[in-house]
Length: 238
Length: 271
Image (cartoon, rainbow over all chains, first blue to last red; front, top):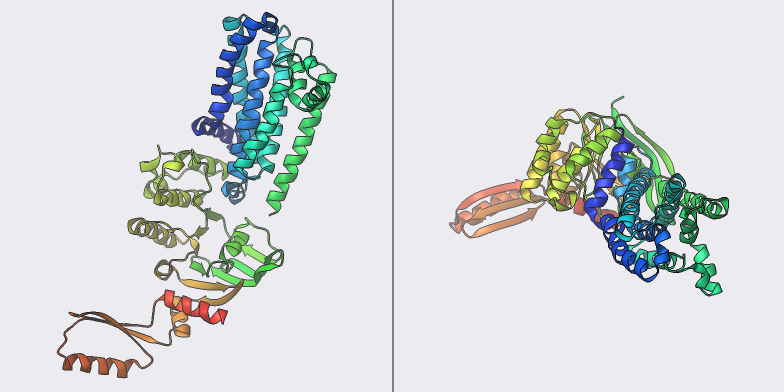
């Protein structure tokens, strides 16, 4: 196994040991799923067809916006980043390993939701499974890209907690996963569309995999890559 | 080429604050060399520039050999285990794991602990082990024994001496003068970004140690006398004690410690 792959596997283990990603990728989303899944499907039985997508948006948003950034601050806001330079490895390696590790954690959590929802709440499985999984992967990447920007640009944990909540809460409240986005006042609907959760949610719905729902997510990935690249380049130049 | 490291005219400033003002330094192969200086003198900046961890404004740095850098005790993730860090560093350096070296540094005893659970001494030993991965020729140690108890210091000094015997070049930054005096062949004292002195501890004593110190232990206690004229002071002291019928238990004459000379040098430089 080469250094990069070993780093990803090691990071995956560290994430579980550190508890922060364990809580934000698994424990809280799965408890939320178990509680809200029951409430949603009993109050509004029609939600059975979108329950998996709704719960996945919540899980991914939590893991990416609240779970990933603290790990990045721990590395890039401290002396840990010197380890990369001292060993002649690129400074973006840490971001790469954390990103991939979080991706795997979120994928596992989402697949657990996808498998449990039909059994526990009679939720409908997506009919176009390959497109659904592709949309899920894209949405996880987009959310982790935003989490990466937060982790690299915000300099301390206290500020990060506040800013992460400012991204996380509108993402789940205004994306249409709790109630149809059309029921929101116009200005809240407009705000909701700024956050990628609404696009991601629509992309994962049956027959939702189309350019209209995809272009904005791809735009966010590119923007995040540019921001992260610039921040890391600045760090390297120091 | 006998030099492991050669630094010429190294300049580094942070905005208008000049930290290194044209540093010149030569460190020979196989030498144990210490970089001393009061806080803010530029030691860490100089070391980090040489190590390649920090960019500098101008000057040249030539390093002949593979470097191993012992980083500070905050440079690993909190939950990593020592052997995981060793494996990761080995893969990055494409080096085989030297279990003999790891056992000598006591890594076996701590392999199941997480980094956050290690004592300061254990962390220092782990960072030394990580610096030695890939069998480097030049080893940088930044305050290697800071925060260690006496036993931890002795154990780490032993490891450093073993490395010296293997022919490694060791560059040390430390505030512990006794450690430097014990381990190093030569020292450089940095002051406001320039070398105020470079040579052996004896050469520093010759330069700064103008006074003699007579330490006398009697049944009445310990006394230290400072003098410029060793012979006259010693004779007069002995006569005085004999007249008073005070028995001498121990007597020692020196020209001051490295620490005293360092303080004196720093004082002169700031005047």
